[in-house]
Every structure is written in structure tokens, then in C-alpha cells.
Length: 232
View 1 (tube, one colour):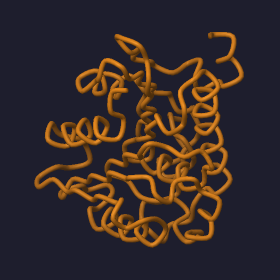
View 2: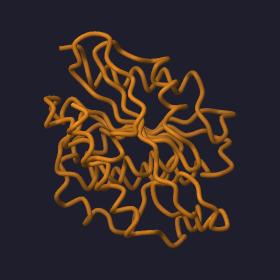
View 3: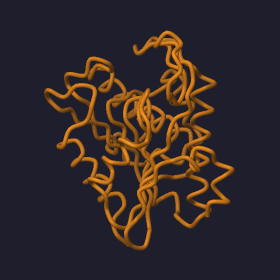
């Protein structure tokens, strides 16, 4: 198993929470800017289902324009956080390919893509949305917490070959988010509804929640995972 992982660098380093019985499904969850997979591996452990393996990769360390070019874990460069900010198109596409490589490897190891959920928080949620909408692999679902859709102006065209136009999406956002305002999350949900089946896009907001997650949100995530990845 380890031998296979070497060709997918993100996977060989990732924090993995193994299934406690026969593994029949996978959740891949991507952290936010400046973070690592460890915190979200703990969060996933708190809502884990025994037949699911959870993979929380670490982003590579790169200089981030938004933070005065300081080097930190980041899936791609961030130049600004408003809908009109310039974006690191090459970096976003490269990051999406790296996540698709993890999905491909899980499929090769016997878990069909229809038994895989991709999710993330903030920049990781943004990358999850972009990856799902540009991937031919049909996923079981996508979770985007406190996030946005990167390169939003390239859609719906960018999703023309996507296998996920009917894939359920759970998007959650804190109403007091000072980093990615909830209005940006709402605009993202509306944009998603123009790209895919609108009835499959769920947007939930949490009063008083800032740029983080909360127990109510995590229980909504658990419910979504359980619904989209039932025991087989």
C-alpha cells in the first residue's frame, strides 16, 4: 500500500484516520490557509463513522502574497479575499490535479469514486469545490465550509466535462465571518446553482459563528456524510 502512495506525495504525508471495520468509503478533507491536516483529522475523528477512512492531507508550504509573501501551508497562492481579487490560476489548477490524484489512487485501491466525499474548510473548501466541478470522477458529495468558488468567472464553461453536476453539495458559513463574509458564501451557492442541479446545493449559515466551525455545523457535516455514504 505504501509503495503506491509514493507517486502521490500529498497522500504519503497525509494524516489518515482509518476505518475501524471494513473500509467501504473515504472522506478527503482539506484544511485552510496556514493550517495542517492534524486539526481536521481530530474534527473528523469526533464525527467518524466506522466504515469510512478519513484522509487529511497537508498543503505544501509556499510564499503567500496576501500575507506579505510569508511562507506557509497553502494549497495555492492567495492575492486577495474579495470576489474581484486576482487569482493564482496555474496554482489552483495544479492543486486540483494533486487532489484528483488522491481520488484516483483511492479508486485504484478499490473504493469507487461514488463512495468518496471531498470537503474542506476555507481555502481547502474552495479547492474542494473547484476540484469536484472540474473532475470527471463522480463523487458521492462535496462539503465546503466558510469558502468560495475559485476562478468563478470561468464557470459554467470550466465544468463542461465534470462528472459532478448532480452531486450533492453541503456549503456552510458563519454569519459573523470577518475573513470570508457570509455574502461571499451566499454568492458562491447561487453560482453553484447555475452550474449544477440547484436542488442539490444546500447552503446553511450559523448565527454568531466567525471564520471557524462549531458543533452544530459539524453535526450537519456528519449527517450529510452519513446520508451520502450509507453503510453498504
